[in-house]
Image 1 (cartoon, rainbow, N blue to C red):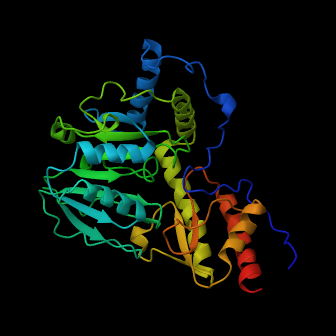
Image 2 (cartoon, rainbow, N blue to C red):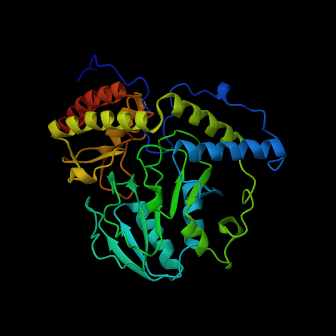
Length: 358
């Protein structure tokens, strides 16, 4: 089969994280004035604090909520919350992706009492009758399965326990109801396209009041938090500032949301007519804005298929998460161009014909 005359994506990077950099980004635009400086110097500290204040304003985080910067990206931030904030009450763990399962296993290692609700078949587990005294833990958008809770209407208005959510793949895309989440955890490398070095925890006054002195690793200790827990990457913070600049230039949350909806529609229409894949999440109300994940309907040489797409610079990093069913996983977030997704789907059709029907 000869190579077709089909336009390739201008940028073949469709990874679910770290994601493609936003339009307008370049190393030359990163301000390097603070590199090699002591992070507690007054001007450096002001620079960091100004970016965090800006983050609160851009995402419309309530003034009374506190922003913590934690080392280790989202993983470090989640672990800090697990170690420092949880454990006093039973935890209802809502699990519908493999990262949620990872956090559940860590909760178990600490011998916390858990109301375990899991579904890894592309559906949401039972959300009914969650005890109001329980703490609740869930991942807003599961990048490994392409499923998203999408809203918090399932929460009892009288819920008394803490609500904790890993919102890494939802931040900067969804209009997060901050008042309903006591600890929101995310990093910068998804919708924003920034580097992943640091994790963020947005904590409500209710969550802050829960904190107490306990024996935890220094890197997870919110009680001992003083401006930062350890030395930050000032290069990462400079990158973060540039990505925030570009985020605002593109229209902020409204611009990102519209871009994600348009991107999702491209993949939805393609999947509906494809005989080679099927959407893992069948219920449209729980399909994530990003990413798109579909499983294969036919058996063929998956390795050869993905190598062809990668070697020919058609699509990089679209293979399913390592624990998930064989399929394709494509980031449809706001740094991805709609025309690149259209080009990708055209090439996917041709490549499926090449490898499935050979």
